[in-house]
Image 1 (spheres, rainbow over the protein chains, first blue to last red):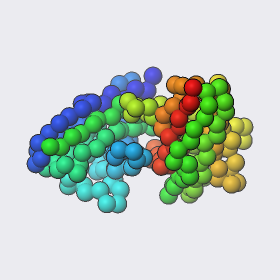
Image 2 (cartoon, rainbow over the protein chains, first blue to last red):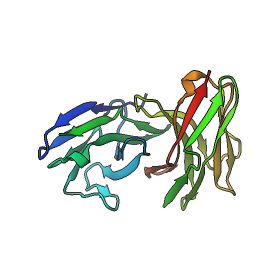
Image 3 (cartoon, each protein chain N blue to C red):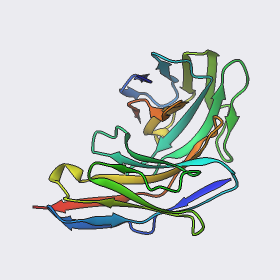
Amino acid sequence: GAVVSQHPSRVICKSGTSVKIECRSLDFQATTMFWYRQFPKQSLMLMATSNEGSKATYEQGVEKDKFLINHASLTLSTLTVTSAHPEDSSFYICSAQTNYGYTFGSGTRLTVV
Amino acid sequence: AQTVTQSQPEMSVQEAETVTLSCTYDTSESDYYLFWYKQPPSRQMILVIRQEAYKQQNATENRFSVNFQKAAKSFSLKISDSQLGDAAMYFCASGGTNNNDMRFGAGTRLTVKP
């Protein structure tokens, strides 16, 4: 139980375009979803916390206008990277807290060319 | 606020031997969880073991066990009878209990030598 489905797993986009990443909780309701970014050979860094029906909370240094988070339902949270640039290329992964701890999506490898 | 520190960027162990990965943490939460996650090259986050802070007994999961020292804010992971499949990045993490976020240490890359 407690599965988070994340799509797409890989995406390549042109510089200046936007990319949407989706995380769905398949068998539980996720009132809160955490979004992390991981650069190569580094740890997971929390970007923002999304709460169903309210505004996301962003970590210091994360541009909220660039990384748009929407959590419109209890089973879906989305992260949109707007006007992507090569420096946004990274691994993005979502996580939700369950009764058993935290469960992670499988991650999205974003490459901006 | 939570911070997690892993002071060993890399560790190496001989197959079938035992290795201990270190982790210290700091948190302002009164109730919290501590975790060890394994991240293989696929980058999927795999939960290795979880410890509730209110429990004094150290958690164990087959070959994996922790040494949880709450007063010292230390949470080390012991892997016994190491296997080649244990090779991966290992992250220590701390999380609150009320939909609070989870913070990760910098990670330890474990190599298992045949």
